[in-house]
Image 1 (cartoon, rainbow, N blue to C red):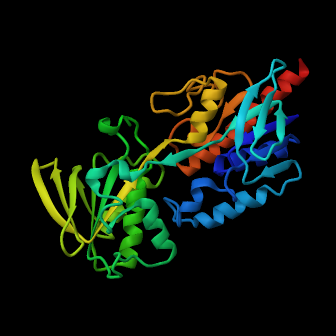
Image 2 (cartoon, one colour):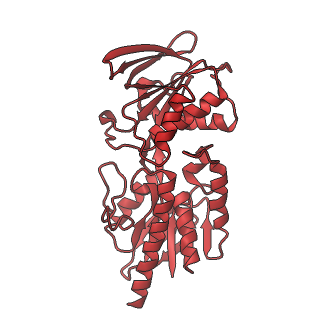
Image 3 (cartoon, helix red, strand yellow):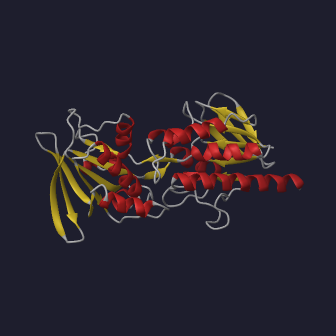
Length: 342
């Protein structure tokens, strides 16, 4: 039995390992030159502040399994369902793979902050994204473009999520807790700075998240303002002038910041949308691939033999992504055994 997995992020790596342990041959396809996907963009994870690099190493080491063939720097250019129920995948290197089942673990892409022109990303030098800030954590230094230390830093939640203007109605689920984590990490590097989070609603859904939010306020003195940014501009000192509204007290705000951090949300990846088109998979209005059933078939699709895992179906945190990958591997294993018996 052979399973083809497209995408070697956390979901793809975990599912490949679990299937391989069942004695199933796996071809794992990854378009980049390394595994890990978006996990490579992060320094520490929430809520325990575990090193993202350490987890990435564990996932990568699992791929040394003899039943896993890893195809790096390789794209799935064409996917076809055969009449015999198998799936053929044409690779960019010219190879043709045939599998008894196909698992899409094509992940997500981060919202392109330039699309929110009013926030000034790509225009003003001291407007950055949450991913840019993670890179600063890796280097253990947060500075403005000039090299000066910022004295007042603003975090803007829900950039590219829950936004009717850009037709992204979904919640990306992770922006709130990521902002809390990053605000704490910023405080540790800049103990004298003023740190302010502007949020729509604080969605602390996971275990340990609410506690982390409370600690951010009580221990780290991080301020939280319920309000959405309407406009950002730049003064002659390269500081960012923002206009917002405190929706709890109903008053407009005008504030000068040294650094503005945009918490970019998740969108369906190009790989997910391409695979959905080629395989005629049902997609949600958000563009993510829709499961066959949200309760009892969340790893299945409307096409028999085609399965999904991780953030190709919806925004998920890393814990849920890994659990979903294990669920997908179990679902595929059961499906293969049942089909083989028949």
